[in-house]
Image 1 (cartoon, rainbow, N blue to C red):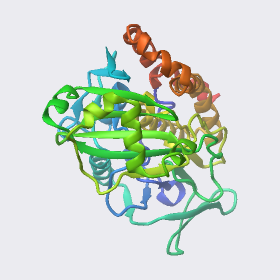
Image 2: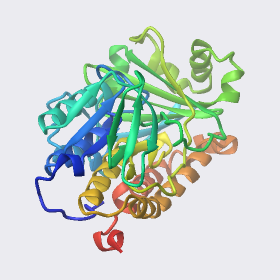
Image 3: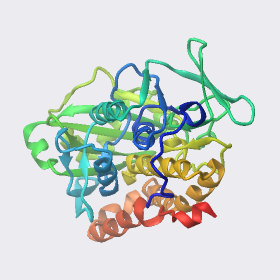
Length: 390
């Protein structure tokens, strides 16, 4: 995705051109850095006092690696693990396919820490440990964010980057499947860690799917999504759920044999509206990251989309492209990619597909290579400067 508009690097009156960024995750930090480097006055508000672990597969695609490099983030120096292969597990068998692009894995806690530091170095004013409760218009050219202590912050332009958390008045539609996501770190037994060393593995089970891959520090990240109705069948309890998943997917049971869980309890999140793309927005409000689009987790494109939407929104703002025009063009650019990802996700969650999957593993490498290329951001989300400005 190319930058939307080239803007002159001007020093502007911060009162006239100040920007408020709500959310200090990947998208919020990326936008803040891009804007601050162009001389804009940027205030970033992040509800967590310090970066923490988040429910995320932590996969960095080739596009994500390029965007992070442009932001000054050297993931290799942070301990990122190269990912060369993707595997699909069915019953006790697994098929492997080489990824058609460079990829890596890095915990969100490490990545967010580095991005926040880079934002501060770029001159962004960062307020941490402050939760935004509401965002409202104050006249035609001013937005007001109300914080948890009742104080307010005002700016003519806001970048909404609150991830999976919605603000009052700016909510996304209900999640019809009522997805629940869990994340747990494990220290695998040495033999299993060696098997997983450079691969990301996708495993299917009734009501959802999960992925496991190595991250820095010699540990593995297991992320699982499941529909709430299936979680209800095991009493909404993590220990029951993970036990049932291992019964349904012996490959995961093999990976977790002798593994040590590293968190007291899994991190969990609900209300994940997979397939959502924001249709429109208001003047002065650029929606990025999960507030712009939520792609099914199995694609590994979440971080990449966060970075790309942030970069393009920043370029649109710098080029004086109104937010509603930018948002409409972004939606159009992402639609085909999102539809394909939703179609593939429906197939993965189909009981017939799971039943015949063991017999289809021979063709999996070729299918995976094609699917991986087609669901990349760069393939379907390129927004030309003249198209946005029109």
